[in-house]
Each structure stands twice: as structure tokens, then as C-alpha cells.
Amino acid sequence: IDESLLGEFMDQAMFDVYSFPIFEPEFCKLLRQTVRDLSWLAEKDYPHLNLGRRPLDLDDIGLGWINDAIFALFIQPISRHLFATTELLTHAEKYDSEQLLDWRQGYIAGYSASPTSAKGANRHRLVPHTDDSEVTLNLCLGEETFEGGAVEFYGLRGTEEEGELVGKARRPDVGTALIHSGRHLHAV
Image 1 (cartoon, helix red, strand yellow):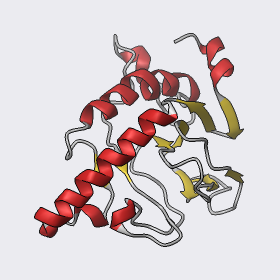
Image 2 (image 1 turned 180 degrees about the horizontal axis):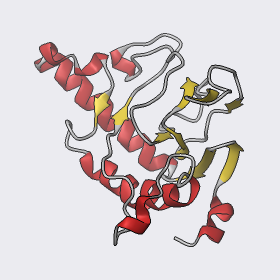
Image 3 (image 1 turned 90 degrees about the vertical axis):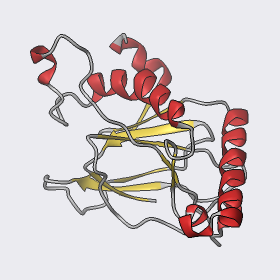
């Protein structure tokens, strides 16, 4: 990826937090409906799995190819340019490969003012936390009319700003991703 092209399709919301479009709203709608249908089917036929009451792992429901595509086309090349120093992704000179990240995990978690598994939204909000990853990509799949979804950032774990509100990224448009360091303390 040509680093000079990143600025053409990517916006910087704040330090180490960037947004850019990935999917068309129509694809997001199809993905939302697929997840709702799978959740409903699982709740009806396999209630012991609790699939409608927790975030769904895309690999578990046969949609791991979406994880693979996002990882290969967006997370790997972008991280190489944006997070190489802040996340110590500087081992590239030791390897004959551009792959600095070696693992990906993708979940779909829904949020709502009144959460229900029928909506595919099983959470009201998510408290401040860091992720168990070098880099996190949040992708907005919500409907155009939903409210909320802003992400608050409380500094990078291990820095002087840790725990202090350093900014708020507005809810991304449907199909738009927010990429940031996994150790960036954040809340939805």
C-alpha cells in the first residue's frame, strides 16, 4: 500500500484513531439480517448455545472469510504504516514478509437503548476497556437511523493519558471502520 494514498480515503479522528469506508450500506444490511436470522434460528433450535445473547464470532457462524478479507486488505497494510512505532510493529526488518500481525478475531456485537436478541442488539453500552490485540477495527453495520455508537477514548494503556478522556469519535457512517491501537482505552 502506498502510504501517500492513505490520506485520500482515511480521516484521523484523534491520535492513533482513524476512520475509513469499507463496505456499502447494502452489504451491511445483508450481513445484519444474516446474523439476526442465525441468532433467531440458534435461539429457537439450540437455546443452550446462547448465540442470541452474546457477540457472535464470525468464524463460528461460517463467515470467517469476512475476517480474512478485512484482515488482509485493510488491517495488515494499514497497521504497517499507522501503528508500526506506537504498537512496536517494527519487526519487519527481521522477516521477509510484510505481515506484522499474525492473528485476527471478528465479532458482531449489537447495541441498543433497549437490548434484545431479536434485534440482534444484546448490549446497551460497553464500559471502558482495552482489547487483547495490537490493533482493533470497529466496523459500523447499524441502520442509518440508529442513534448512539460514538466511541470515547481514554488514552493508551501504559501512558500518562491512560484513564483520561482524550476524545470522542462520532458514530461512524454505516460501512465505515474505526481503526485504533488495541491498548487504547475506549468505551461505546
